Image (cartoon, rainbow, N blue to C red; front, side, top):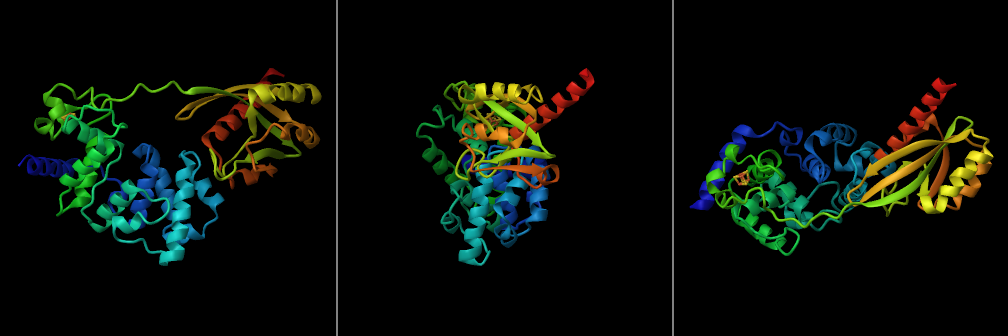
Length: 359
Ligand code: SF4
């Protein structure tokens, strides 16, 4: 009885309160797949413009599979977690080659595609095809752990239990709305820090609410402070071209371009030497801070005009790149740049402007 009440209340709430989002106006499995990949660890508002651009550029599996990875990464620039884009692209190529560009209709078959995990398979199969399979992402895990007062760390062995609970709750007549309703509740009402229980359609069904544990669950290990990583970055110009490096595909920021940077312990002296050798045409241009999930990057930037020959010595310090190239400004827009790269370039531009006003 409780399950039935829960289902009815949540579906009724979803029917009236759901946000009108572009991926909810389609049943195209490809479009739903793209949205689910983009939404992983990323806020809806951030995803919206990327989703629209991506789908108008690559409206089908075929179009995505045909595209060079570098173009795909360029459209993804700024959205972060670039591994998602690389895996989406590889999976589209797999679907194109092995299935003629048609995504399979069941979660089990979707799971057979390299790069599609249980969550994405469940989301695409239930939302696009109406298959009665569960989904558990961060939002759903939080909602379920509160609804059933699961007093445990979500990362320690509770995952299987959550998937079992989610499977027992799926509404067979409308798994699409049900799964989206659970995700929507987690995204808009059952928020991580301050759940809005008095506005929640499941308030009277919720064990955590009844026991006064809503704000405490799910239990989470204390997050480690991000590790401080000091880097030295180089924004160097020569004859109207900017020096950029490309990250190897299988690592952090794989396939993305950026002003090259290196470990500060290793390359700090090289930066200072560059200032001396260019007689001040290259200067220290300030520091940029960038937060990743486990790292806090603090980068000292050296910016200015430098003869290409002078960069030869620097190359020995730049081990994180599989290509280094001097690119025209117009070419910059065609390369995928990380948010960090944009920050570094913006800082260098600001510095140049400041220098002009100082003169
Ligand atoms: Fe979450 Fe509160 Fe609703 Fe329970 S009552 S599901 S804790 S918002």
